Each structure stands twice: as C-alpha cells, then as structure tokens.
Length: 124
Image (cartoon, rainbow, N blue to C red):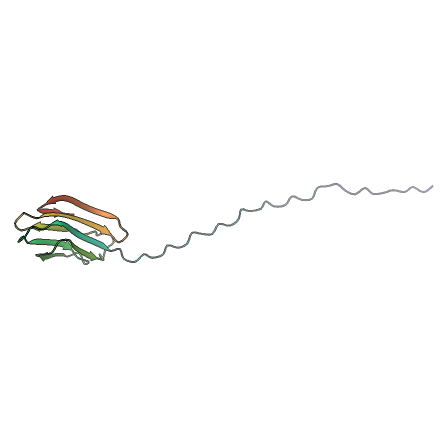
C-alpha cells in the first residue's frame, strides 16, 4: 500500500507590523506682524479758571516737546521709533491751583504708567 503524506500548513506568525507613528502635528502659525506699537499719553483732572497748563511729552523720535496752555483732558498718540522706548509725559499748573493726573497706555490697552494724585504737577 502506498504511503500518503499530507502536509500540515505552517503556523508561523507573520512578521510584526512596524509601529504606527503619531499623527503629525502642524507647526504653529507664524506670528502675524502687529505693526508699530502706539503709545497714548493722557493728562486729565480739573483746570482752574485762569490757570495755564503746560504738558511736556516725548515725541515719536524721542525728543521732548512742550505744549503750553492746553485744555484738559489732553491726549497725544505717538508711534515711537524704538519699541523699547515708552517715553514720558509731564504736566504742570502755572498757578499751582489745577489738579492733574496722567497715564501712558499702549495701543493694546496695556497701562505702562499712571499717576492719579490730583496734584498741581504730575508725571508718568
């Protein structure tokens, strides 16, 4: 009698699949340029009748400028050449009878300096 042989299929495991990588994360968007930062100087308070208020501030080029006999409230918005230069503002009452306050605020609303002492002279 002839001998028959049968082959049993192999049960070897298939090669493991390579690990799947995590989904790629998109890089953050490039920051959009915000343009030059503006700074607004303000002087508020109460001007006494007949008094003369003078305001000295730093302009966009970094020079000190003075305006005499200004009305209150007074504001000036500048775009400084240097982003690190915040400038300054000072106000004074000639007869020392007016009550003055000041502030320096950036275009995004950040208060860089404020003085609310209601004094005849103020500086920020």
